[in-house]
Image (cartoon, rainbow, N blue to C red):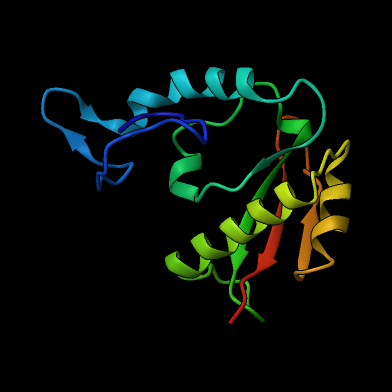
Length: 144
């Protein structure tokens, strides 16, 4: 409902899925997509790796324009499986990764450096893009 927020933005409590439809506006996802792609690109650091910890439904709303070569999309999977983790397990693991990166004051120049850093704590499977214009992907196993 609020679009892209920064960590200190204050918003009222609400419960709304990104695929919701609002009376008079229609679905949120296509409404935000052209706005968020540019906004996310402008908010990104001009150098270094962009780590996209959003779930698939939130990534569908928009990805940073022009930053695919240095973006890593993190996919949380169940331990020992290629299947996605439960929504709660995925959120928890994404939050733990975010905290880990912030605590390590990570300033990464290449996506492979992210894999090296996170491999100290999680099982990590990085994959370079198969063609230009696509982001790196990284599967990380959620804890039990």
